[in-house]
Length: 124
Image (tube, rainbow, N blue to C red; front, side, top):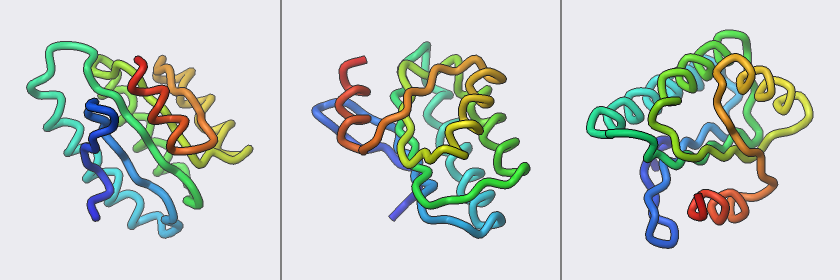
């Protein structure tokens, strides 16, 4: 299954980025590049903040190059994002994502489960 794809939830389109269960950093960089390309294709036709994004980072690990790639993706997507949610964040990742939020100015909400995140996203 594609790791970057649109899913339909309660009649709303959600851009789902599945970065879960990846510990090989080269593989994760490839997945991030594919997700960035998918997001770029979605945003070329966008005329404002329309993207609802769900990102799953469960059981994955981040190195400095991964964090840099996430930062660049978050900066690029910012003008198009209506709402963004993330799941799979442990204590260490929470620190990383707080820094990403500060650096990019993005508002990314953290949730414990996919269902909680999806329910919140469709209400935005």
